Image (tube, rainbow, N blue to C red):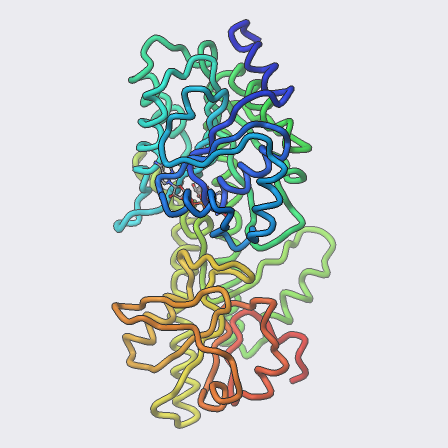
Length: 431
Ligand SMILES: NC(=O)c1ccc[n+]([C@@H]2O[C@H](COP(=O)([O-])OP(=O)(O)OC[C@H]3O[C@@H](n4cnc5c(N)ncnc54)[C@H](O)[C@@H]3O)[C@@H](O)[C@H]2O)c1
């Protein structure tokens, strides 16, 4: 280890470092609380002043963190601050970037948030500091995009010597409690070996296992392999669902049976499409990078095609059902708006695509989601309806789009005429 880094290394392993987290969303806020609980002094920075003000009043805006959990965590942290300015960077030893990396209108990576955050932090002297990027980016972005932005404003600093830069992808899975920051191995790849060692010193305090890879580029690619693996396998099982329907076979029975094989098979489940900030988005980052090299990924394109066609598949099946039942002005209830159970996150949710398609077809619908109070679809605001016998009696068919565990399926099925279950939520209900 270079001498310049020894002091930083010591501060990190003894948890005497000050850490600033940039971007306090689903990734940044839990990370800040976890690092604070470990004993680090922490500052959370977010450009969204509303979020900063809420945090100052101990109000959580993330469904995975209740107000009580937030307050309890904050009470155990000795030194915690929230700000919408970057001043804390000056006295920080480590800075972690957790800003969004969505797609723009043309479905290309929108790296404006990353650039904006890097430009702002690079205004401060980064000497003897660690910068870790947790936002998902395309392979090469930390070295080709973030490093030059830092060097432009800190031309006298050398990476791996004067300051350290790593990519360490977040692997959080919102809505489930078993896998957390502690027991999920953490991937880390630095621009130099020194950077990786310094990054490992930080994350080793928080995670049971830190997995070093050879470079930041390798860490970026690891994250994209993980999420592309999910997206393509979901694409495969969605296609199997379409095939099974044509063959009059129950896909859910098939997946349950196949998963009894103790080796060589891993279950993935069909659904109304892909949602969330990661699985529909991340493979596109890889594909975009390939396009810049005049290449492409056939798997990514094919699975995108299948996964993004699923809301269409659902709506065309619904139309067929109404045709067969001779119902001309059907009333539909959509159950669940969030992209996955037990979260309020509606980013890229296929339920929104289903609603938009129904709207285009002039088919009336209402929705219920206990975690999403209202939504705007093509200029019209819809409010979550209370599930009561009156609502269910006036519904011709309900589409189960998200199987939140709060739903009482027994009650719902007993009071409804028809249900289109895209999630196998009714697996335990007697037919
Ligand atoms: N949500 C997940 O499950 C998940 C899992 C793994 C990885 N990721 C990745 O982590 C990153 C963050 O995702 P997220 O879900 O936490 O996003 P988010 O939208 O919930 O939070 C990002 C926060 O960054 C803030 N922000 C934007 N620009 C900023 C700036 N210049 N300075 C300070 N704050 C800024 C936003 O106001 C927002 O509060 C993304 O790259 C995402 O792909 C997300």
